[in-house]
Amino acid sequence: MSRGMCPRVNSCGSVWILSALIFAVNVIDVDAYSCHEVRTAFQLRQVGPLHRVPETPGTDVDLLICKHQGPSCCTRKMEESYQFAVKRETLHNIHSYSYELEHLISGHSDAFQDMFQYLLSFSQGHLSSLLEGTYSSLSRQTLPHVNQLFSSLSLYLRGANVSVEAAVHQFYNNLFPLVYTRLINPGIEGSMTAGSEMGDCLRMIRQDVNPFGPHPAVMAQELAGALGAGRQLGLALEEGVEVMNATEHISLSKECMKGLVKMVYCSHCRGLTLIKPCVGYCLNVMRGCLASVSELDQPWRRYTSLLEQLTHAMAGHHSLELALLEVRGRVHKALLYAQLHGPLITATVDKVCGLTTVEPAGMQPTSPEVTTSTVTSSSPLPSAAPSQPLPEQWQRQLSHLMREFLMYLQRYKSFFAALPEMLCEGENVVDDSTCWSGDDVVESYSGRVVGNGLHAQRQNPEVKVRSVDPSLAEVKERLDRFNQETQERFPKLDQVDDWDELGSGKSEGSSTGCDDEDGCQASGDGEENISHTEAASERRPVGRQPGGDSPHENPSRPPR
Image (cartoon, rainbow, N blue to C red):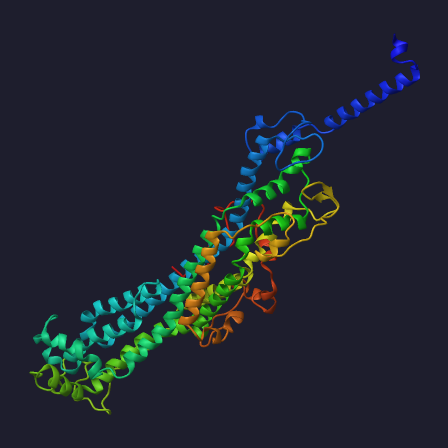
């Protein structure tokens, strides 16, 4: 019977041997890699429940993403876990980069506001010292009006809907009754109360009578110009923080998720847990996933250019500092003008507001600093103590803050275009002889590498981009609108000369030196050529948590 089934022993033995060999090869192929390494990676990367990973590869697995011929250590449930894990990891990596930029902007926003408030406080103290030392008869009564003026300027610099010109003119309106009754006609101050009709009349007619000459208008114009750029810079920095907040909550499409799983985890299904994606392959996947983010590139570049121009307009030639320090001088000149023209002012006020019921005050001065209505152009006028410059320590802090901000800003101009590249560098990819192409281990990626933006993704072989992320489209529109409004508000902003002192750390009339601590050596001609990708790869430690230390954690602050 056996001969009937196998008439030739040699032939039957050959068939049996061949069958045994095929079986052995299959067993060896399955056992060539167990799922132990896959289980370990699954657990270490906290992908999901470990029981979802089989002990040994399966030969009949129906997968949706990680399809390939042969045994697999993956299941449908594992693919679902991989999608959640890769989304979490990708958003975390994006956040770790965007956090650096967000922290840079928010940190310098706080530092600039501290600088503004310090300058305001210094200028207010400067003016108060003038009134106390030279115009002591006015000092106490003018204090509330001085406080109100600088409070309004502070609110304006913080972005409030306050008019600098209106605040300055209101200050001089409130100052006029005090000057009229205590300097020009010092004998009548007792007959006027805070709410008297005479006081109200003087406030109302101040701009018509013009008792302070051109100085209120000049002061208002100088402050509005210098503080306007500072205010807009503060608003721009707040806008930048809002943009970064919005990009932290981007949504990844289903096509993107599939592409990411295929790139990061499908190699695990074959037991290849250590292989890294090819660089070109990673760029295609990330540029497809971040196509809507990359659309922010152009408005962001324009935005950073406006930040530079606003900084130059505010800090160039120390415009903001000089305008605030000059408040003391402007008020002093205005008071001298009023005393010099006292008789004419008195005659005009008598016609409009009623009679001045005292003797000409020139015959009975009440205090050494008072110059009365009989003063002539040759009479001695009160002299104020010379203006005090900003402390040298503060000048160095201010100069360093400006240079530091502009230096870092250069590195982040191309942030949204460079983001896919940053996610595809370092230990995340391999540009070596062997890498993962999404389907197999290859010597190099052979697919076409597309560029950034929505239009370029039409040729993307890895991720199909079907529509724009509506939330990011709204962010782009908002940023475009802010840029346009800033340009309309400051039409000559692009004509502002660059602040030459940024490179040297020197300012006219000061000893603001430049040393290594100030970072001056990094602000030369070559600085502009530093790409954001290079800078980020040099600064960012691998696996740094967004809440951890940052190189921009403590931007320069005013001296305490």
